[in-house]
Amino acid sequence: MQFRNSTFVYKTKTSIKVQNLFTRLIFIFLFLPLIGFTQSESGTTYAFLNLPFSARSIAMGGNFLSVYDHDISLALGNPSLISTEMHNQIQLNYIDYFADINYGSVSYGRMFEKLGTFVASMQFMDYGRFDYATETGERYGNFTAGDYTINIGWSRALSSTIFIGANIKGLYSAYESYNSFGVAVDIAATYLIPEKQISASLIFRNIGSQIKTYTPNTNEPLPFEIQAGFSKKLAHLPLRFSVLLTNLQKWDLTYNDVFANQTYPLTEIETDNKSTGIDVFGDKLMRHIVLGAELSPMKALSLRIGYNYLKRKEMTIPTRLSTVGFSWGFGLNIYKFQFNYARNSQHLATSPNYLSIATNLGQFLGK
Image 1 (cartoon, rainbow, N blue to C red):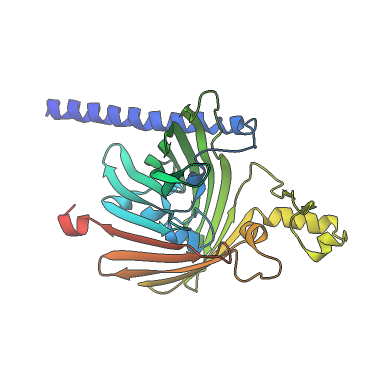
Image 2: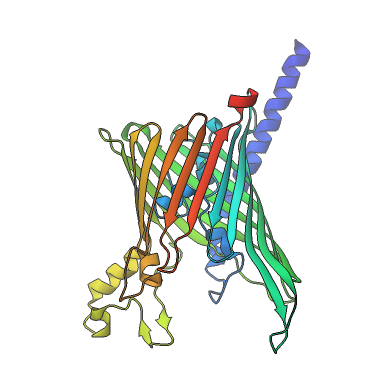
């Protein structure tokens, strides 16, 4: 009995040390975003990190959500949502992107009694195959290009309503004979009001640096971003609203059109120089806001829609607005599997398809 007690004390002390280590790392990295403000905005590397991987997230307009309902597909974008219910969950994402480009991820959750719950993920982005060619157009072979990430996510409850989490990411890019290694961290916190079915999250994404650059003396910053999210499920209707705030590290997301020598958005008011200060402020504010809604008329079915104002202003054609900036999708629970599909209207040319499949291996193999 004495041996068992000493073993228990040892394991408890070890788990506390591990948890404290992760917690300290989280708070240390919370100060690192300050470095992001001093980095050059001329360009970033590993831009694929900000792409949405979850079909549920993109269907509601963004690349993350603050919904705390134990969905492992949301953990990659918001690690503070990791919970013990994700134990043995596995999820696959696949995105049929533009041209021959496709990307995806696989995630697996595992709960350790003393250490907490971890979600391990692997992400890839395949840009396809390219031809070598001479100045005269003569082809003589081909090469490939791709980005890859290994991600370990962890979360801890500070109280019954406050959760913190982090993703630690190892990054690798290979473009023909050029390659790069890097490391990044996501820091997130979520606050719950269970009785009102409200959740809110704050996220610092892609804090880190290149370890090996593509070429000597050309270190590029990572696509650092501060995000916040809010979700509310109605008490008497199976409807959830979501509001996402993106790019909080930078207020003005407008840009100059070097060809037309005008400042976007290209509206008649802007062109006629009749825009007011309220118009400009409203436009800049809306570029940070993503709206989404999820209707669940039955347990096995969810219908989703999202609207991204920034995407619509940057990617639409004034003469053919169409549905650019809108996204939609649905979720199905069939047998022991969860299927999520989304379609995102990014441009008139095409709309990428997003597919996610998840299940709990414990249902087949035992816990």
